[in-house]
Length: 84
Length: 78
Image 1: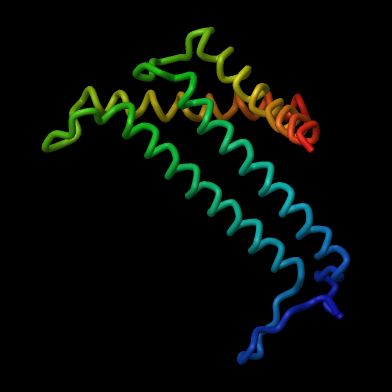
Image 2 (image 1 turned 90 degrees about the vertical axis):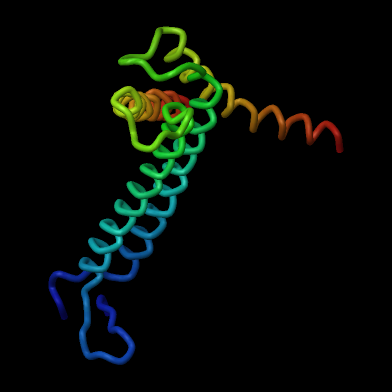
């Protein structure tokens, strides 16, 4: 017994397919959550006085902020893994 | 028998691994969020200063020390 069937339809997927689908969905969920965090942090840092559009200065700030947040995640991840 | 499918023991192991991976990812995300707020106080530059990167690293380590400290103190309060 290595496969699943969905309720009403006759289709079955294998355990392997299920695992692959789960992997993909988990990765997607992780990216979505990560980008929401980046948006919130960089909005705080870069959009201090919201104008009628995003300025060039704000735009550069956002790019730098995203790079820095990615880097911060790497630094923290390394420290976390070193102490496990 | 579908030769490409795996048995339910493998599935259970997979789910346990994924659960643990998700928990670890969440911990790192939380640490990064907290430590970013603590350590990156000015507008982000094109790279971190050495004090900013040291702060991030230290922050993660000290935050993890906290659990041990709090549990220990709590136990001594019983």
